[in-house]
Picture 1 (cartoon, rainbow, N blue to C red):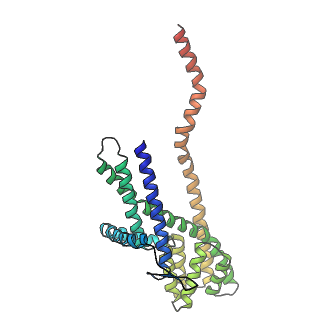
Picture 2: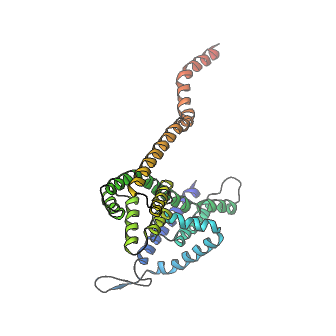
Picture 3: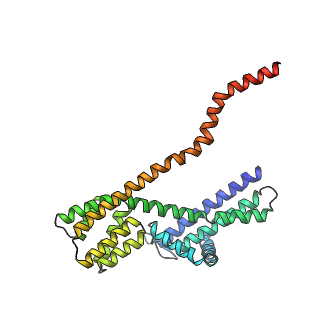
Length: 296
């Protein structure tokens, strides 16, 4: 028990240290790589701990990148984009997090062995499992952001349809949407407008929007809008139809989740509620039967 507590304290300390180092890396990355200059002209260089461990983390990131499958590396890069961390978190940083998690998992498994497993094997097993923790975190953030985009899309399409029918162009309608819509979808529309202002064609900007989000409803909207632009169809009609379809899909998804609720509730009911009801209803009778048997 003491060994387990010590391992948890050591692992927590190392994890906090790694998190602090990662925050330092993020702050240093926003300035020059070798020095930080403040307003009064004073130059502050990163500390010795940072200068020593930064090469180790970079080397561990390269090792994790080499041992990871090519498909997994590409998936991590896509997940960074889907989660909205593009330009903020690099794939190398995720690999360094994976390496730190693996080391912490190995130390924890080695200090607190399980049963008759050798500490080295048990530590290696925990290290492999711990290395997937950053992947799970990144996947959860990506899914969360995609869910927010899908949730805000019907209102955005309705507003686009109304403003386009009022006589505004698609870009002007997107500007109105960005002014009235917060969250990741508003940020993505803002990025589309900035790309168009920089000379990117509308088609390419919309395709980039589809690739950055990977939301089926938004992908269908982008495809329909590109086809309407190519064929000369009225954009207002396309937006109206797409808004109705997206709302229909959202209602269908809500019905699917409602249909899954009884199945999800079944297991907690069987494991937690039924035993309590069984004890309350049958328990007194069982106790009375046992007392009668003992008295005889």
